[in-house]
Amino acid sequence: MTLQSEALKEKALSVGAAEFAAQIAGEVILPGDPEYDTARAVWNAMIDRRPALIVRPANADDVIAAVNHARVAGMPISIKGGGHNVAGHATCNDAMMLDMSLMRGVEVDPEARVAKVQGGATWGNVDEATQKHGLATPGGLISDTGVAGLTLAGGIGWLRSKHGFSADNVMAFTVVTAKGSVVRAAMDSHPDLYWALRGGGGNFGVVVEFEFALHPCGPTVMFAAPIYPITAGAGPIRFWRDFLADKHDCMGSLVEFSTIPESEDFPEKYWGLRCYTIAALWAGDADEGERVMQPLREQGELAADFSGQMAYCDVQKLFDELFPAGDFRAYWKCHYTPEVSDALIDDALRIAAEAPSDSTLSSIWNMGAETMSVPWDETAIDRRGMAWMYSLDSAWQDPADDEVNISFTRRAWEETRKYSTEGRLYLNFGGHAEEGEKLVREAYGDSYARLSRVKAQYDPTNIFRFNGNVLPASDT
Image (cartoon, rainbow, N blue to C red; front, side, top):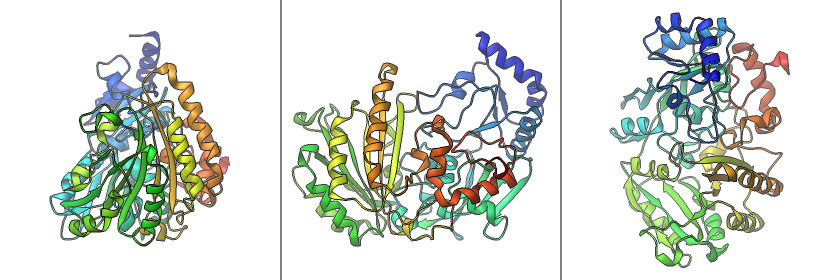
């Protein structure tokens, strides 16, 4: 055990970690324990933090006990669901990490079309349970992403065009607050907290259960994925943008820039070349979707075409292999933008070609009709009318390449800020935690002051600070 680990363990023991461990059904992991390094790891390999103790609650009572223990000990709390957040909010230094991985239950009521989802579940857990009944709720694009982290910041998935953000589909949250109280937040109960949790992140407590509205979906859906070499230029992307004008109520879609791997799935002449995929899910009848989306596959020479009818659960796993947990270092940024101009498309093509890492992705996202239709003040997600998002998802493996990749991402983000509106962005793609309060205020815009007041009510001492942190009103 290192001197640092010994010091952290001593601190945890000094505040009664051993006695606390004997009182709960779950697990307490201390520095130096065999599981410690595995438990503290998160998806982004850049993040290397050392909690004073890691608590794995088995149930809501354990969560209450953990929050009470941390409050008495004067420890802030980070919360790990799937651990996928690029900023590494799930883990912390010298504080309590609450690892929710033992709480992944999903209970489906197919008649009421409601799913009750525990706070540690992944989207793979949810999709597997709901698709048994031909139902789904909007989730993420990677199946091992945590439900909680994605949903609390909004949640952008393939079904957004027809059913909105993940957060729009939450009927109620069961939350353990900083005082150790259990609160059910819904439209008719703690409506201020209900509003804040739909987009305000993990600022207000530990969500131990989500109640999601479900919608008919699958089990077979149509997914379009033609891949164009970057030499195809702007034409297919401009066609896609215009094609969506009367279809963005039923197509969840993005253009994703990447690099063609050395794989038998592609002709050898394309290996190592930059490309872009016009990816789209039809949120309706699969045969109709295949017919309607066919023109997206006919805009020039293709490097490959992975389009076809497939199981919805398989669509939800398509991007899983792009970024295996712990294999990549990552730094992501984004902008909301009201339109995709020809100039933005040209810049996106140039930036994709200039990326220093072949593992880097960048994307132009269409937000979809239902996502845009929600009034801006109905949820904490600001600027609901933004039709598009441009994201830079830089990824690489060698720590020696950190500076060149981070600098590239920041430069490209600044260059494309002119297409944004008042600096608005999606905080799940916000960069790293160290970028601070200014970024959070920009992201929430007009919603920030109200979020701050809710924060003061439910977490006045900011015990839940490892997130896109909103300061309690008294501290602003």
